Length: 282
Length: 213
Image 1 (cartoon, rainbow over the protein chains, first blue to last red):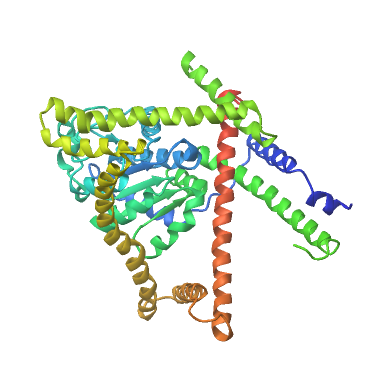
Image 2: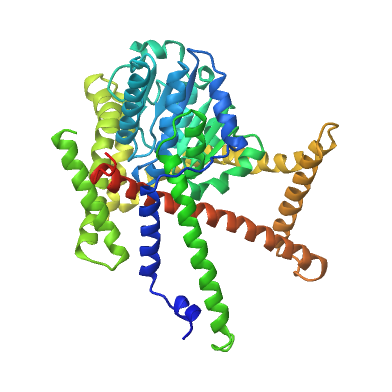
């Protein structure tokens, strides 16, 4: 049995170990990589950046802890940009395991903004967190008529009519765009029932697994920007000038991808070199 | 870091390592973590639904605000539970029919518009875009590639004619385009899965073991 035949028959646990060690070591060694900005990420940044103080966007956080790794950095970067530009943010979390996590993300963004600028962002004045309701498609349609239909009160139980920020916000006509950060099919609903029904400008931040499915909507103009996976998150962190977990993660991605490519090449050589001996059977 | 956060970090680290232990082989730690996640998820959702939906959207309006007509959706919801008993299971078809009727009526026109009509318009619009005076060379090439890709992929799924001759050759191009699409999806999927692993290793290294702190 030669080297490649041995590699072809290797126990998969060695592959896991190699990958784990590669990630561990590359996280401990300080180095950086350039993060080129894609047009679709730049579009979102530019759109939010040109908003005037006091204008509002809707940030729809439709993900759960299983996709936190890719989507949380996007959320924090977008919130940072909105808080820095004094753009009001209406936030919803239409995934059943999302609201607690979304509330924690908002707290983190508020604390970081406070740390950077000394300015305290206030719930009800600078942002409003509406929380969760089931059946996202119907909730998206309901908010298009009036936010108060599905959400008479915010996540903390305060009536929307009593919140200063919501005085001028009735429905999607009063927000400049919706940015949907999602690890679920909620993105389909935002495209069909949000943008499709109410013509509100929509941008999305999705997991890597989902990203290729949504590029056709970019080409048709149904969405104006897309952040795909950890790379999209790293691009946005770079754009807002706060490299964080996503930028750190991307340098490790490169090492991990090289290891995976190496194993794919070795596995293929092993496959082809043993195929003749196995009588050409697949 | 306060005491409770510290406990939370240690519990999270233990559960992360328990889940990762499955990579070696199935074991009681993995099973414990898996079952715990399923149980906690179900419990969390029940409480969330009670306090976010049932209480403010049904019980309060009905019993506190005197909005008697809220009894109608509440009864429809309760009828769904008749599925649990064989003799009364047929009753659940009524609320189900009501729900399906609404969902279908709402979904069909909007889904058709967003996922069929707009996409069709987007593909046909590429030809119009190429006729624009200021369409650059890159745009033209890009649009031609997309049009060839869309057309050949559709031919691959056209089964009313045998895939021989010119149809077969175009269909072969379609297979190539689909393979490129699957390849891109696979690449993104690898990145997504590795991202999850990276985040957990970041957590274990920097939040649990406090490397570089």
